[in-house]
Length: 410
Image (cartoon, rainbow, N blue to C red; front, top):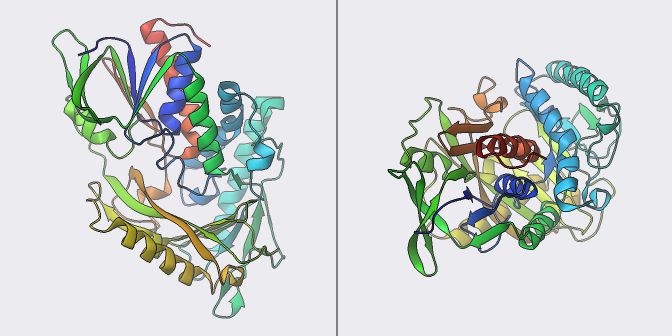
């Protein structure tokens, strides 16, 4: 068993940022990733939206919207500092439209009230940040407005939806971001990236360290660590329990949801980023390379439960089925998608607190406040909540670890 140092489990965006932040503080890190490369899981296979908080209109306290705003305005600056200036102008999408669908669990009036609260919180945050209040290379002032445009307006039952809002919320190309983060990790001499390495279990040793059982292509071995940062996604709770951390009593849920990419036969000016609200609807996000991310919740979300989903018997067949059903569901809403070819269909895992799904207006899934790092005698367990908040959480976690272990503070 090799001994000592800091081990980070999981090379998604959360674990990658923690590792890079610690490396900048002069600390050597071992970064374990079960995939063949970093950034191959949920951080890569998603719509790339950097949330400003609109989708959390049903959070009664507004706390989630504030958290998303803080994560969004720090997202670019933190990653620019860690990786060098990144090409946000090439990566970012057009602004999202929010379309209120028939059957929405929130009326336009309720949504507009939440959006006004979001604007108020953004104005307060911007005043405190001054010139550093940018968002993906832009400096927004007005976050949303009602729209009379046809662009982005879904067609339901032969008629366009009535209520549509234009926002300055954007997505970034997640595959491009993943490639840049992976390349930066490989260039960092203070980080030992070990891919294809699954942590099967962990235990505390008699001398207060940790022993991690790691399975890779050579078999199973043990790695010792003074500090462990658990940034695993689907396995985080199980690994926490293996070192004696009792369940926290919250009702964690696991959702398996597919990321489907299609390519329409030709560009269409009315095909813009759209989020359909409020409830189990979906998103359409066109990218500059001609591909489009699509999600229709009733077909893309194939599992909901209190435990991680079991492996699928025929993953390729299920992925194809989800992709075709999603496209068939969305083509009537967005005719510009007709004739699209399926480029890819990949499952991802969403872990959050909530016993009921998003069609329930009282579900805890409409609030995402349970994120950040918890420290238990050298074991750090980190819940990033969303892609949006991962850099800010990573920065804060690394700072706290630096104080604990006495490394430099950046």
